[in-house]
Structure formats: C-alpha cells, structure tokens
Image 1 (tube, rainbow, N blue to C red):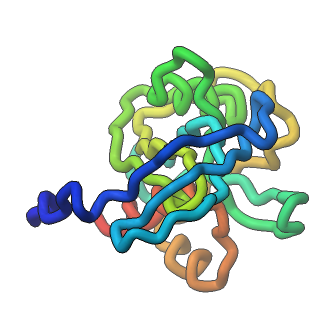
Image 2: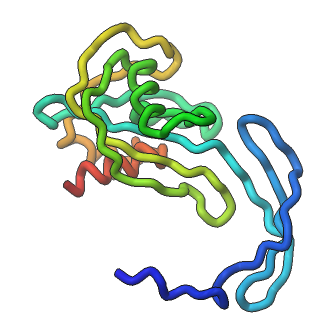
Length: 182
C-alpha cells in the first residue's frame, strides 16, 4: 500500500497553538490552522500522555487476562486489559510490563509490539502502544487494588464480548481485535 500520495498541498498549516489549560494529565489548546482548501480557523486540541496496553495470553494462548471494572467518567462497566500511562522517559514496552505486574501480579516473559494508534486522531493527541505478552508467571498480589479483579477469559469468548459492547476501552479493543485477527 502506497501511503505517499499526500503532498504539502494536502497538509494543514499550523500557524501556532496556545494553551487554554495545562496539567500533568491533560492539556487543552487552541491551534490557529489553515486547511488545504484555504479555510483558516481556531481548532481545539487535547493532548494526553501516551498509554500502553498489554494482552497477556496463557501458555496455550486460549485465555487472555482481563478485568471487569467500572469507569466513572462514561459510567460504564466493561472488560479491560492491563495498561496505563507511559511515564516520562519510560519506554512504552516497559510501561506495559510494569502495569501488568502492578495490576495483575503477573510478570510477563516475552513481549511483542503489535500496534500504535491515536484513539481520536482529529482532535486528541494520545499515542497508544499495544503489546501482546506471553510466558507470564504469577509473582505476587497486585499492588494496584482499584483496577478490578483480573481473570482468565477464553479467547473464544472475546468476539461475543466485543459484539455485545462489553469492551469499550479503545486500547483493549485494538489489542483484542489483533488477537482475533491472528
């Protein structure tokens, strides 16, 4: 697939961006932009720290370690994989392995990077890194106690969970769809 068809004439011009609100968790900005057609306006931007998510498979690769939990912002319950925000100067793979241990008590033996994506590319900057982990070994009790209770979910059940809307986290969804596609 050729992705080199866009040229400078198709690129949006950014004349500047100013912060409206800034914290370690979120930055809201307004960018002065001109579209390829020549329309100039202010466009809101949201910048969030990058995130890493990991799908941990059991030895037979028939189960994936997931948590069923509540998320208060959208007020929904759903199935999620371990993951979290990438600390400054931390490699996303290291984040995924660290979060897996903190949330589940499992240390992952091997890690495969499978995808990177932006969950709302038109307005939000928030690079997500997706990994698959194998050869996991239970080392300890989880140290993050508010992440729900993790359990081994049959991979054969994943398609039904997605179809029923029981997986709503974008990082989890991308990782699970990757598993289903292989």
